[in-house]
Image (tube, rainbow, N blue to C red; front, side, top):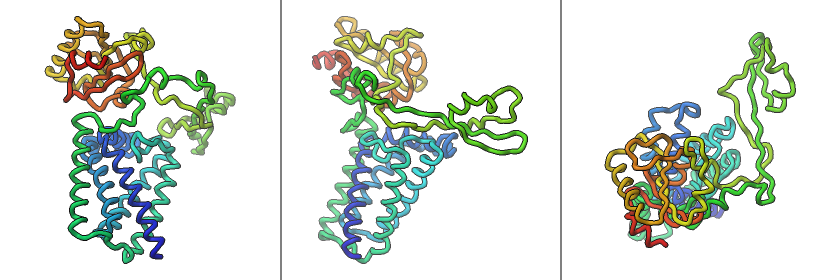
Length: 373
């Protein structure tokens, strides 16, 4: 039992530290995932949506701290019980996501590693078993260093995690795991499976239908729904329960890391033109309604300063931006929230390759951007 506990201690401690760290570098990204969980069509805990960012920051730091505590062997009763409560909560979330197909990526490892819903659930089940072993074998968990050294390491872990989270919220994450990171080529990231000679992922829609006469409930896929007119023809007693309709993967294949990315100028798609330009400044505005006069003024100054250069300046937003010096294009809001964690954020492109990304708090001058080329 002693050796099993030590093995479980190492595995759980390392996984919690890694999982916490990849969330810790990007708390805003985790907050978007929590908002998805708290939304009306998932857990319907509306009042928690406004607390998504504080909760994301807390969870990411808490995971790291628990992992460090476990590896050091300190406060073992608190640590093991806290680990158990945490993993029970995560196991519930991943099961709910997988069973109801509500959230297709749990966010367990941020953007660093995407896991299928059921894979996430099975991973949590394994961790649950390992943590139960730790709870039952607490007596075998002993400190490996002196108390003074433990305090120093714990202090560094907590303060370091707070600082990394601060950078991820008020500046850009110290590590960018997204497909829009500096150095990534967006044109390459958008290539379809067919262009790369790979098999695409295929999906099917599962409909839940209820018979209005006898209350019988059935599940059918979209091919059945289309091929058999008894389900939808006029006068049929079968009625689709819209809230239970779900899309599932039929066959796993290649999916482009970049999708729903495009510059829509009132129906005119200028994506190819913009991505092939050698010098582009893109103002990314995920929440047009949350802009204030100061932010618009800063963007307008950059736009006007760029007029004396050979840079193309483009703005994309989820809605029309009042007062902006140029007419903005439209882009999927989820895509923009993935591109930048700032509102607005800036990316600089060179023929589709990301040369630099800026948070609003690090808003660049045109001279700073020119120095990139």
